[in-house]
Length: 536
Image (tube, rainbow, N blue to C red; front, side, top):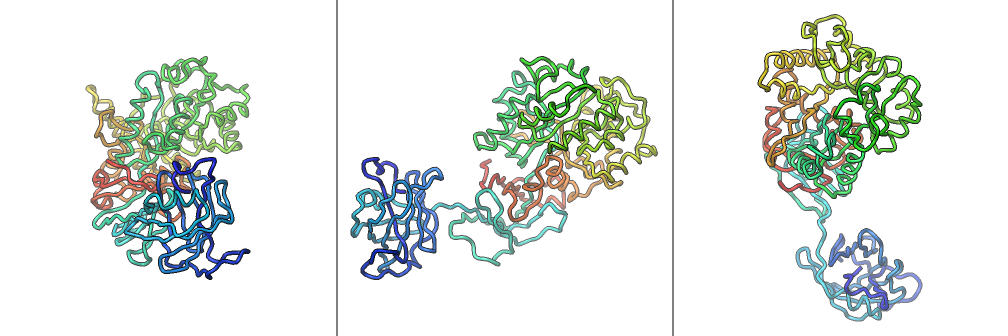
């Protein structure tokens, strides 16, 4: 519909008309306006959509104001008649000349009995909306493991991938903004499969700090994150703001936490449930054998969480019951690899979907400590132990993903007292190498998303580098760990993780080939989120 300033309630605004008028006779005869510009044009907040079938519509904020049909009576003359919409001038025929210069369309009135249309349509330049983005000339790395494909064009529309084809195989859409990516590489946007955004929303995770981290993380190529439990109130609001576009952020998926009663003395869970008695928050729930698990899981779902996280002080029987109920209610289960007293093999046998922290594999063999001491690893247990090898075989058979978190062990080994930390890192690397050799799917997660300062790159780039340089994955395998497998871990594989028609247009464009050197994921040329370029 024409500009809002022209639309007064006393004079309902109307506009355009069909190629073949139905009902009343029209003179002279109208022919279909095949050369009348089609597409979407905008002026003062109103969008005019002109279709090749002779229909048009005027909308504001996605709401129809006027619909109608148009026909051509001369080389540069069009007749318009409204037939639908709350501001339509039904039955009033309007005739206009039109002129297109580049992306701008202008009208001049010849005759129109509709005062609103006569005053509004010719009063402004209508500028073509570039609603599609065409990326051409790129080398495509689609995240499936297929070899890179040079000379590919991607058409992005309405936040989705609308087409993928060889350069020149199909004409580019008229409404596409075209970016030439010759020499560049397009991959799925990266996904960090292990972050914590809201452990202390009143302190270190204050909202302004988290928004800055999320913005820098997106600029660094990460288009989605899997949050491993925190304050459900803050996480719900962050996820909503990210989905609505209110903040510059990756997509956020997050878990509600379930653990045994003793865990709720942990200061981290207290800060993430401030104002609520420990263990009673629906996003941080204490459970025992007598807990109504149906109710507990339902309340967790009600927080907006997309998964349950199992943390500590759960035995094998209770773990299996929680997993069964969560799956019954449609929630995946993300778990630490050891829950104490539940050993890793018991956790995997319970049917969890993803397990975190490779180093915990040693508790399949070592004597289990009090759950608070589970990080005090018995580093004499290696990946060659038969029970550890059986654990990884079981994970492969049960299709359980390993969120390895090598970055967090590397970060620990950089601390002043490094002797034990470095041994822990080396043992974690050994376990990931053995798991990968056994066929376990590896997801790239950091447990430490990004440093706080502006300009920092997200730590997922280091995680991928560790998977290649320390574990022995190929660069392609490490890239898949941070795209397809991480998407599977987060439960968003239907929309993310690989590049295909219909999937989310959340992409990373690199200046160098990451399959030749995984460090090239840092060579970021641009990031695409929901089909739009994110300014760096």
